[in-house]
Amino acid sequence: MPIITSPQDFNVDDLYVDLRRVIDRPLFLKCEGFNFAGSVKLKAAAAMVEAAQREGLLAPGSTIVESSSGNLGIALSLIAADRGLRFVCVTDPRCNPASVRLMRALGAEVRVIADKDANGGYLGGRIKYVRELCASGGGYVWLNQYANRNNWLAHYRGTAPAIDKQFPDLEVLFVGAGTTGTLMGCARYFREHRRPVTIVAVDAVGSVTFGGIPERRMVPGLGTSARPALVDESLIDDVVHVAEPDTIRTVHALAARGFLFGGSTGTVVSGASRWLDAKYPGEQPVAVAIAPDLGERYLDSLYDEGWLGEHFGDVLAGLDLPAAGIVGV
Image 1 (tube, rainbow, N blue to C red):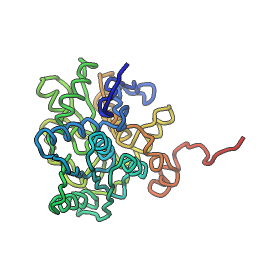
Image 2 (spheres, rainbow, N blue to C red):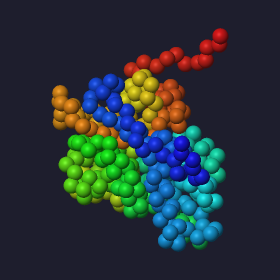
Image 3 (spheres, rainbow, N blue to C red):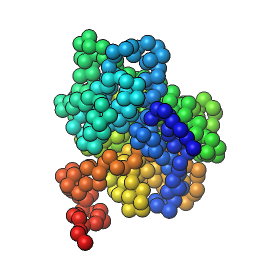
Image 4 (tube, rainbow, N blue to C red):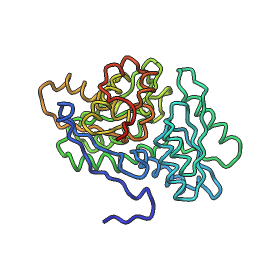
């Protein structure tokens, strides 16, 4: 029976879903959403805060500030609350209302930046605001998840070895690309340990992480409007780009079988399915994909008919959704 004193001390690291019955492809899904932050970002958040405190960057009275579309902000809110630190999350209008409420419930201050950058996204504006805040002299400390080596080190030391232990014959690993911390940590681990694993990055159409053409993106999670400093394409074997309508269809297909996941997972599973069809038709390779979080905090977006109708009307028409409303008995 685990007994903990800090919320970041608990994390389920060995739960996998065999998706063959759901998507009819050989794919094991590593579920990273079973901790008090609800996502894989808890690992990176803990590693970055611990390093900042160890190196003396976070002194008494300091305030952590970070740009986040949701999950890292929630993880940092949790850790800041546990350690008695102040935290300001700089986000944008695409951040789920549930994520904003959760961060505020944990004591964080949330500031929403609505100015778009040159690529039509919000990341440039968020980072500009963070830099200005740090330059104001108010004791703000930016962890910078986009360039902080402790981001990928958390997965090099934790996520990748856990997968390696469970799947010693692993052939293919699919990892979604956001800040690319999870991707780079896992890729480095398997490369440096000389494991013959094909590393496939999964990104959203409209993201510029791997040189794509910037386009409108509505699903929070994967993809960026500015290339992360952590990216090292020499460690990656292939990249799959997934259109957001395919993400929507995939999360609803998973939900129809009782597995409620977020948009990042829908993107990764969709990309992995397409890649496996092309590279291993009719075969059964040992393949794992990483699911960064669960789906509850996306009930106001990915699983809401009004939101889907506004942003993905064509997709909504093809989904087999139950009738809306509550039936009294």
